[in-house]
Amino acid sequence: MGVIAYTEEDVKLLARLMRAEAEGEGNLGMMMVGNVGVNRVRGDCLDFRDIRSIRNMVYQSPGGFEATQKGYFYQPARQNELDLARRTLKGERQHPASNALWFFRPGGDCPAQWYDQWNSGRYKEHCFYIPTQADCPTVY
Image (cartoon, one colour):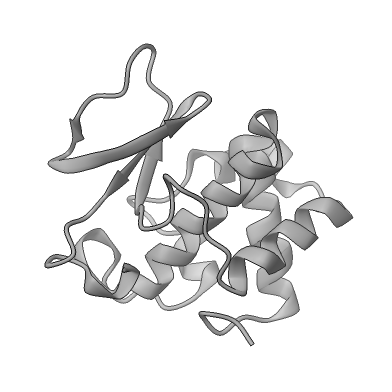
């Protein structure tokens, strides 16, 4: 049982996304990407209304992930990435992505706000951004 409904195909898809977006940031960085993805499915708020599945979240357009447009994303997930995806789907959260709905990799410091959302912290190269609890209570 997870914090959202998922199938084995969803595990594979999330694992591929986590690897493609953050493999260079290690297991913790990949889990943070997974946290953002799961939060988008849980959220039903802001840019993510009616995103009710891993597949909808990964391929959301506009607003989805750049990685889905690169060949590396389409390679099969390895066991480590599958294990990380399962941990994320079961509810394991990593700060600063615990409640985040967005992340990006700036050229320098993390801006305090990005598209009117507050920075919750940085992990290696990625900055994470959270909604207010009033705007998106289901990610808290």
